[in-house]
Image (cartoon, rainbow over all chains, first blue to last red; front, side, top):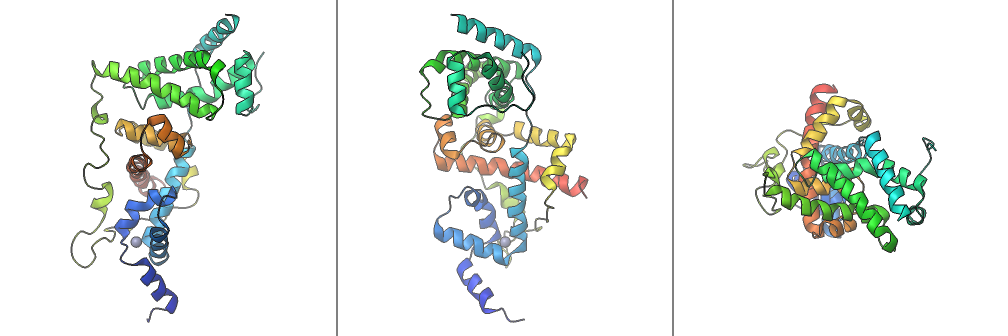
Length: 92
Length: 218
Ligand SMILES: [Zn+2]
């Protein structure tokens, strides 16, 4: 099948940006640190490559997961000790 | 007086004012909100949990000492994390005389090949393409992963195995949601360096999750 004009244009704009380049730059992309030119190439590559779209999504979901990783609650004894210290600090 | 379970912490101005005036209720809320985060961050600096717990205690003492002079030029959280970071660094140096910090020593971002390089074809016409294309993850993957205690433990173990500066960066950026500007300020590193460390850390966690998604969530 002949590539459509849109595909040809995307290929041209993606340049020779490889999947490996995408993987190496994915954090810079997500952190908004790519130059405008790199960003366009990155996005054009994504438009043409389902594997890299999957990879980007995996990285996003990894970050979402980490954002929600719970912390342990403070043990009651430690908290009581801290409150005691706060009171005595306040009394000074 | 016991605090209501869902009472939100006031904004920074409220927290700072409350602490400066010695409001116990505010202090209790601040302790509830930040103790777990402080411990998690301390563990990214010092090798043992016992020492990390001491560093957290010292951090709270640092809060008492400094809150009167705190003018709110950074967020309260950034200020708190910077106190911890400074105390933990001092402590980490002292402890490392007795105990090897192990992986944390060689952490040069320029060092070694990219972590991802083994995932790509290195010769022939397909150079730079995925050897095995990454799989599609369903939108509920984070939720399902977080529901599994086993998987949470895998993630925590993966983070714990990172070189220390990578662990510090991913803890601040992804676990605590600190901005990259503030992280550079807290850790005294450049933005580029910060992103390199973050990339390496995230990539390792992604690989752990990928294994889990492939084997357990199918
Ligand atoms: Zn690709």
